[in-house]
Image 1 (cartoon, rainbow, N blue to C red):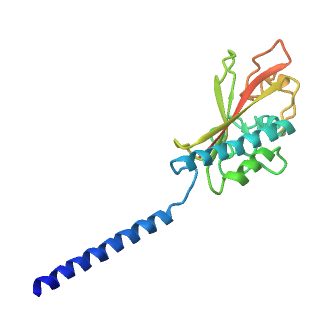
Image 2 (cartoon, rainbow, N blue to C red):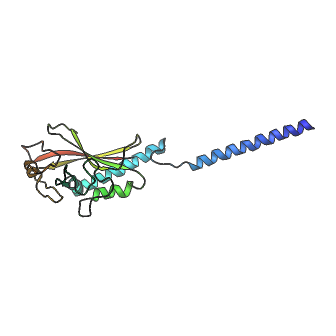
Image 3 (cartoon, one colour):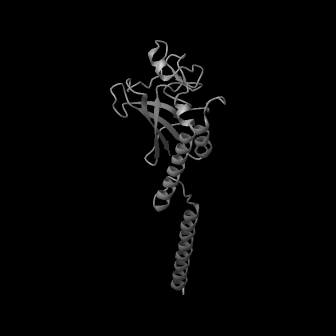
Length: 206
């Protein structure tokens, strides 16, 4: 009789243990939150959706002219020069959006869409003085450092000699490069044509 009771106790203990383990597994599965950094098919779908959203914002801003104006929103009175109202040349708009008078529609779209749930950077890649594509970079927004799960959307903008800076100094790009007091970093790599430079705007979201 004693052995029978002991066997029943072991059986009951194993049964209770199995229930506890199963309950823990079910709870863990229900606690998984699907985000753009979660692995698997959902991860790919989420990343593609984020990339598409960022690409649409680039296209919309480029077609309205806002993207080009923001690229030219430069303050060369600082030493070194920087985007007007930004946190510095190496940081861009890392803590605040550009002032309300700026052509900031593109950055407002990004901020409203990604700032609360993701981080994002905006990097300008342009032809250097020798005409090499992607020869140099300029930070427009740095919110942090990207991860392996980051997605990238790009758009190419052509700048022209007769386009003007859009901050306090409104000289043309051509006039700015010919003046000793203007340090707009993107060079004129086509001096014998109306084209000034070709800039790739890269949005990195993670």
